[in-house]
Amino acid sequence: MEHVLVITRQLFDQLGSFQGFQADATRYLHAMLTPGANHFMERPAAEKDPSHKQLIPYAIFHHAGRYLSYTRGGSSGEKRLVAKRSIGIGGHINPVDAAQDGLGETMYYNGVEREMAEELVIGGTHTQKVIGLINDDATEVGSVHLGVVHFFDLSSDDVQSNEEAIQDLRFHTLAELHDMRDQLETWSQICVDHLWSVQK
Image (tube, rainbow, N blue to C red; front, side, top):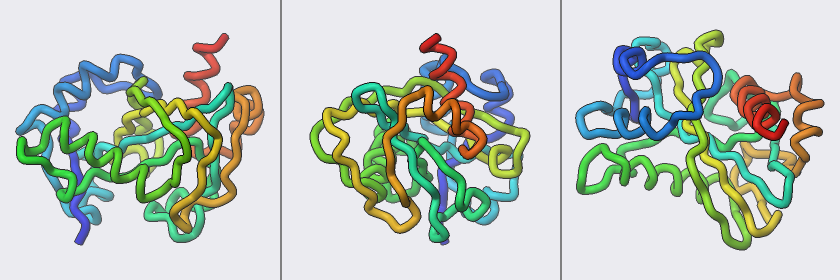
């Protein structure tokens, strides 16, 4: 039984719940990753419990003005998103990521690196930074998840799938992604809208 990292909806509301994109990620993350502010739940229960939010790193990959996108295959762990196009590689934080300091920031970033290594093979080097949070209470999937958007800047476009669920990898300009917005899953739409507004 998979266990996933969650915070309570009550904590999210106390910090300031929002719909869409929130650029002030540092304040939220610091509070949510403080030991005692989060815990693990069995994933099947968490998927049906809107009184909790699963923390999901959602990584977008940029190289030379273009962004990586892919199609979610049938083996994706989130069946409600299969066949959608996405610009985000996401995954749950699991107990295997826990460090000796407990459920803090080290554990969270361990989980981010593990997810990226499991799902992609990235050539060259990269830098990364957190650029915001995503919340979408308008959908069944979104109501039980909270996305942490990681921006990976790549030195090369040599990126390959390491998982069957990630298919048809392509790089697109932001304008191209904006034009194909209707084909994207909701979180990717929210990211593209934010990046488009910043660029303009």
